[in-house]
Image (cartoon, rainbow over all chains, first blue to last red; front, side, top):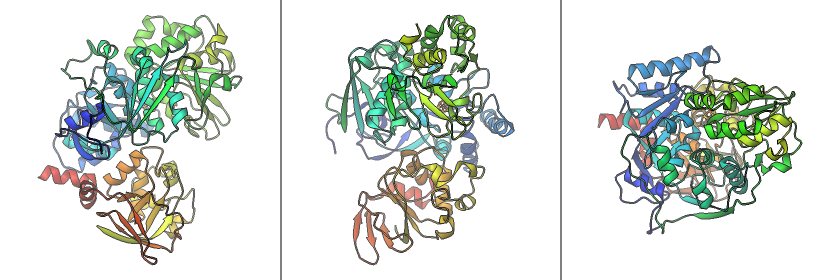
Length: 423
Length: 165
Ligand code: SF4
C-alpha cells in the first residue's frame, strides 16, 4: 500500500466517500453527481428501478437520459425502448432528458451542455462514459443495475483503480490529432494494457492539445481496458468550461508523490497519423502501412470524433474536392449545436459539395445500429472507436479506425492515404 | 461463505458473446439464457453443467460488451461461482450486482479435470481447496462489502435494504 500522495482520481473518490484517503484496490461506496443512461441501457435500468417501489428518484437534476443509439427510431422495437425512456423522464420529471432535435451523442452532449466539471463523479450505463475525465472528473461505464441503484440512491460502489501515467513529449505534427495519440497508445499497451486502471494523460503535448482532442483520448481509455482516462484541469479546461458550467467547482490534482503503477513516455514529434486495422483497436500501425487499402464507406462522427474540431479538420482536407466514386462518405455531427456551428462555418457545405451524406446526430453506424450498415465483404474507414468483428454490419465486413483528417483524405482517394497526398 | 462444486474450465479472453450470443438477448430470463450458455464455444455445455458447478476462466474473463445477460446466463445455469485469473471490469461489476460470486485467483488451475475435479471455495479467507488432493490455491479474499451484496441477492436487494434502513 501507499502512504504517499494521491492521484486526481483517488482524491475525487475519497472526497465523495467521506474518507481522507483511498488506496488502489479498496472498495468504497461513493456519491455520484450524475447518472447517465441511453435508449438501450436505460430501459433495463428503469425496470430494475421499478422493483424498488420508490415514488421518486434520488435527484431529478442528476439523471441524464439521452436516446442516441437507435434514434431517430430505426424500427418498432427501438421506438418502444425510446418511448419507455421518454415516459420515465416524464413521470419522474427528469430535468436532463434530451429529445430528438435537441439531443446529440451522449458523450459529446454532456460536456457541451455544461453538465460536467472537474471533481465530479459520473457513472453511465455505457462503456464510453470514461470520456469526461478530459475535464478533470472521474467518470466510468457501468451496467444497467448500477444505473438503477444510482437513480434510486445516488450512490455506486467502486474498486479504487491503480493509476498509470502516460507522458507525451514533443510537438504534435500536422494532421496528427488526439485520436492518433490514443490509437498509438492502445497499440503500444494492448486492449488489456490498462485493465481496471485509471489512465492519466500528461506532458507538454497534452498541455497543447485542444479540449476536443482530450475528449477523444479519454473516450478511448476503455479500448485499453481502462476504468477511466483523464487530464488534469488547466487553462484549456477552464476556457472550455467558462460560460457553460454554472456550478461552483474545485479542481483536483495529483500530488507530486502520488503512486503510479507504471509510467509510459512517448515522444510524439515524429508520430504519423495512426490506423487501427480490423478486428481490434490495438491492431495499430502508421497510416503508411495501410496505404492502398480500398474502402467502400467512410464514417466521420461518433462520441470519439464527431465534434466541431473533427469536422473542421475533415472539411479543410475535403474542401473543393469530390468523394471518390467508389466511396460513400457519411458525416454525422455529434450534437445539434455542433451541427449548427458546422452549418454556419461552411463546414457542412464543404461536405455536401464534396457529395457526402450529412446526417442528424445519432450513434447510427458506429455500433452497427442503422444509417450506414456494411454488407458482406465491405470495408469501412471510420473515426469511431471499435472495429470488432461485425461492429458496423455483416460479420464479414471490416472496419479500420483513424482520425478525421485521414478519413476525409481517404474518402477522396478511395483508399487509405495520408492527408498530405490529397492536396 | 463456503461453496463446493465440480469444475468446468475455459481459456483466456472469454468474451460476453461467447458466454451468451447476441442472438439470444431478446430475453433477460436467466433460465432461458442458461439454455445457450457457452454454446458457441462448447455446444454440449448447457446439457453438462449442473447446479453448484464452478466455472474456471483464464485472463480477462467476460470481456466485450457491458451486457448483464452474460452473468445472468451463468447464474441461471445454477453455477455457484466463477474463478478466473482476471475479469473484465464491467463483467466483474455486473456479476456482483446480480449476486453471482466471483473470485480472482492467480494460481494456475488449468490442470483441473473438467466435470470431475471438485473444489471447496472459502470466500472470506480466499482459499480454494482441491477436495481430493488437498492442494490449496490462494485467491484474493472476498471483501465483506461484496459478501453483503451477494448475500442480499445482488445490488437490487442491497439497495432495497438501504431504502428500508
Ligand atoms: S457513438 Fe458509438 S461508441 Fe459512442 S456512445 Fe454511440 S455507439 Fe457508443
